[in-house]
Image 1 (tube, rainbow, N blue to C red):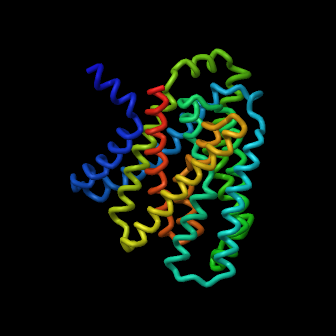
Image 2 (cartoon, helix red, strand yellow):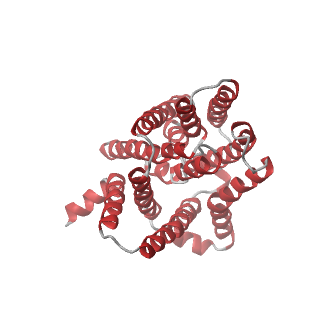
Image 3 (spheres, rainbow, N blue to C red):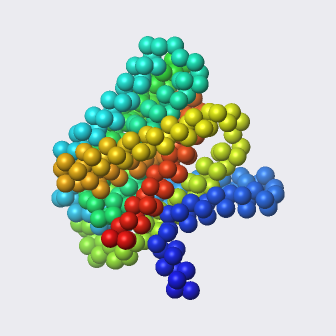
Amino acid sequence: MSKLVTFLKNWALPVSMAAGVAAYFIFAALHLPPQAHVAANKLVGFLQPALLFCMLFLSFSKIDPKTVRFRPWHLWMLLIQAGCYLLCVLLLCLTDFSESVDILIESFMLCMICPTATAAVVVTGKLGGDMASTVTYTMMINVVTAFLISVSVPLLNPDTTMSFMQALGTMMGKVFSILVLPLILAVLVRYFLPNVNELVCKPKDLAFYLWTICLALALAITTRSLVHTDVAWYYIIGIGVISALTCVLQFALGHKVGERYGDRVTAGQSFGQKNTMFLIWVAYTFMNPVTSLAGGLYSIWHNLYNSWQLYKARSR
């Protein structure tokens, strides 16, 4: 029994991913009535943001606000992400590609501009990185992403009914509820309820295990999307290759830039680990819905890489 527990602790991410995929196929095989599927969708829709909120609150509670400050590598990462995105927008606006090429370019640009995953704080801590720096970059890139996508939506999709301010307000609302609110709550508890803060900080890996539940739910949703999609197989392969290449590129660039400033792990996680649920939402709301597959596939690649990183960290 102890060996099983040790195995599950050591390989929590791949086990969580496999559990999410298996959960979808088991649920589908039960042939439950439509009402059960509707209820399951509502439950997942509630659980995901609730678990993310709790996970971030636990992580932020362990961070002293005084340590949250700007680092030089933050600027380089912001310039790379914003620059790649704007170049792709310019390319799509000035050239007349086929639909298939447009989809691949949109997939690439969404993977590049997608903000840092909220779980990156947790994984950075597990890998021995600077959690405060990850929080700082996560805040910054979310604001930059919301602004750039809001500006570019009318250019890329002139038929959209959303104005710049409407798009910006919608995205900032999502950022505030998932990212800013738990940070504010954690700071208030730290300063006004120190005993509660001490109690919250006691469980060492609770935030990480909450993330594994979120990951299982995300993989179940990704599996459902892939099974039920009517997108041609060559689009799926193309988007899969693009998302894998951007994942490798961003982790490599993050490690390289971070290494120059003595923050290799933190910069790598901040740049490579993405909020893929945000990517999927942006693709469905503002872009070609087919590009939402990039988010689901990217989540597989970055979590596989994180599993390997955690394995190497345990080996050391």
